[in-house]
Amino acid sequence: MINMIQLQLKPAPLVNFLSAQGVLHRLDSDNGYAAHAWLCAAFGNQAIKAFRIYSNRNAATLKLLAYTEKTEDELKTAYREFAEPLTQAVLDPETGFAFKTVNSQDFEQKNFGFEVLSCPVTRQSRSGVEKDAFLRHLDHNKESTKDREAVYAEWLADRLEGAATIDTVKMDKFSLVTQLRRPGKPGQKRQTKGLRRPQARLQGQLKVVDSTAFEEKLLKGIGRHKSFGYGMLLLKPAH
Image (cartoon, rainbow, N blue to C red; front, side):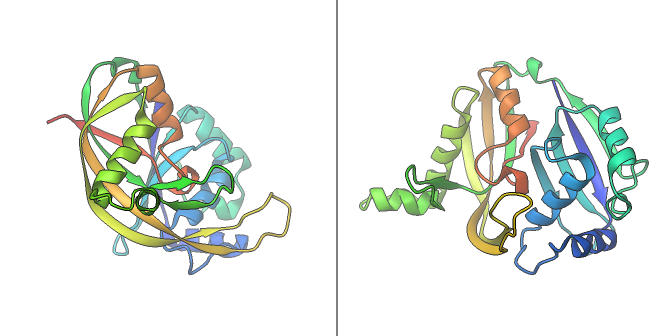
């Protein structure tokens, strides 16, 4: 059993927080690093493992959805007692915080619709270098006729193997985004880098085959860059 939280973040205080942390940066085009930095400061770096942030320039707040093993009381207590003032200014725990329990043990052998904002890359085993899964597929299959959507569908199916099977999948949005990253260990001087990566929103229908394994996928997210707003699997009624 895991929990889903919805947070309503205030944009102006978030900018103030990021500026004070030194992570307000034009390279963060997907807002992933901004959300990651704030979540770690607000709840600790282990509390939130998969999240999705919705940016709307005309909205008064930014919506953030996340899965967590923590309870509502645990998160709110940590936030009130340990988050610093600039961090707390971003979120009102009384009006900007909603919570529900997801009983995934009831999911076994059930069908669901799904949506996931993904960063479909793979890593080379020896060098660890990341590359768009579609481009890597073409590297190894020069005569392939598969399009990007088909390759990404296989990429997703591989990462859900043992937990769920995919019946249908479509890519309804694709773009190349610049992701802000600061490689290195905490406490060390780290250089800010902008990485160009694929961003794909995948939708479809799936069937859960192992509820325990599926819960783990929900909690940890799908694919790479999960700590930066990618890989949160959102479920919908099957159709």
